Structure formats: structure tokens, C-alpha cells
Length: 323
Image 1 (cartoon, one colour):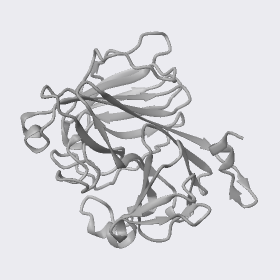
Image 2 (spheres, one colour):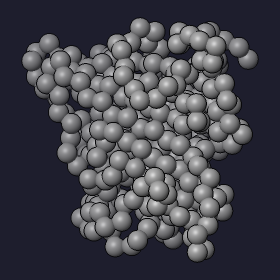
Image 3 (cartoon, one colour):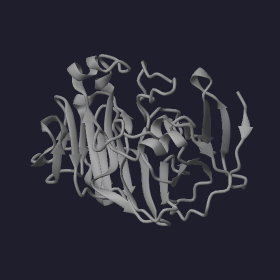
Image 4 (tube, helix red, strand yellow):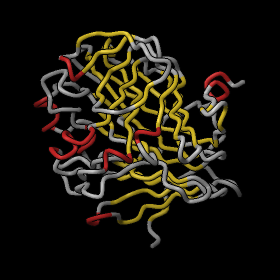
């Protein structure tokens, strides 16, 4: 299924970027790196719904019950929470960016990145009249989605205050990433130990993480504060480690609904909690404030690397510290 070509960096190894029809006729952009990795992003929500490695293995979880029908947000992949995370403010939960139609930006301002990826698309969201009634600010939100030569997926957000009235605005934010895992009980997260977190299951009371790694045996919904720039998600069964690298995003959310909550979510399968884990790069505790003309940038890079066993455990230190 071929479609419209999108402007992209030229060169013999630049990969391909195509706009095609997705589920329910919604437009999506398909990015393919020459080495075989790929990503798909819907213009509805600027929502990444697929990220595959060079073997064609899907790295992201999308619910079999996901509703690809506006104004319902898509369950899974990487929803964008903007300009509000969860119910931390007056807007609908997670804000409105994830259920708006974005446009392809064929002439974005220059973006300096530390990646050599030439396979990317730039999307842009500007406020509609409807948006300004609920959030009375003028802004430009630019998002670049790229697949890199080593199969990595990166999302770079740039939010600029374009208010003409001289007023600043503040927002909270998250890349609500759903990772595909073999079995949630076989997964551990490294890099968040000893940190403070807000427990959303206990009215956002503040605690300090005690374990040497996060493992999962019940519902989890925590906002970790002042987190490192690198977090590892180890999937024992698949012998695979996801590496989450982030810039401009000091917090991290970890969420799995477990069985009872899963049954209560209409667009989520009863047993699907076993096969997903959300680890979200975020800016929540301290809202980002922009004066007119100022721009914020938040970047997420995801990679998946083989991991080996060490004394019966996967060895995350090589991943987290580059040993």
C-alpha cells in the first residue's frame, strides 16, 4: 500500500517515509530504516503505534481492543500527554494532544540532534478555537519521530509559547510508552531504586523506593521524581533489555493495571496486563513554564538490546553504566 511521499533527508541510505491509510482510514506515517527497523505514527494524536526491530519484532504494546476512532485516544503505543498529565489540572485526563489531528511539517526549524538518523517525520500541532476555550494559550508543538541506524526510536518534542498577550503558560507532560513484554512477572526495571516517588494508588503520597529493582506482582502506578537520564527494562524471558534515554524529562511514571483494573478498562483486554508495561519519560512534579517566545525541548530515545544472564539474573549494569 503506497501513498504520499513526505519530505525527508536525501541520500542513498535515507530509508523511506510514506503516508498510508491505517485502521478506520486514519492517516499514518510509516518510517522504514534501510537496515530493517520501522515505526508507524498516526497523525491522529501524533501517536506512535508500532516500533519494530530489524527482525520485524514489535517492541510496543497496543491493545487488541484499542479504538482507532476519534475522539477516543488509542490504547497503547506512545500516547502524548500534553498539556496536562493525568488529572493534575482542569483539563481532561492527559490533556488533548493525543486526540487531535496533527499536520506534517515539511519545513520545520532546524533541529540539532546527536543521531545520524535520516528516516524521520516532523509533525506540528497548533491550538484550535476549541482548544483555546479550555486552555487559553497560543503555542506551537513540534514533534520529530525518527528511527535510527541501530534500530532505535526517538521522539523529540519542541513546545513554544506564541502568546501575543505577553503571558507565560505552564504544562505537565509525558510520553506514555507501552512496552511489549513476554510476562510482566518476569520483568524488572533498573535505575529507579532508592528514588522518591508519588504513589497514585495512595493519593499521591510520597515514598522512597526500597528494592534493588522494580518487579511486579500487583497493580503499580507511581511517579518517580528526579530520575536518571537512563532507565533499563529487563525482560528475562525474551533476554531483551529496553533502554530508555531521556532529556528534559526529569520524572518517570511506571504503570501496570494488573487484573482487576484491567477488567475495568473498556478498551483493554482482561489478560493483556501480563504483556505490557508503561515506563514513561515525564515532567510532572515541577510544571514547565514558558514565557512568550521561549521553547522547551523534551527527547525520548528507546533502544532494545540483547541481555545475558549473570548469576541467574540479567546484568543491567552494563546497560545503565556502559560497562
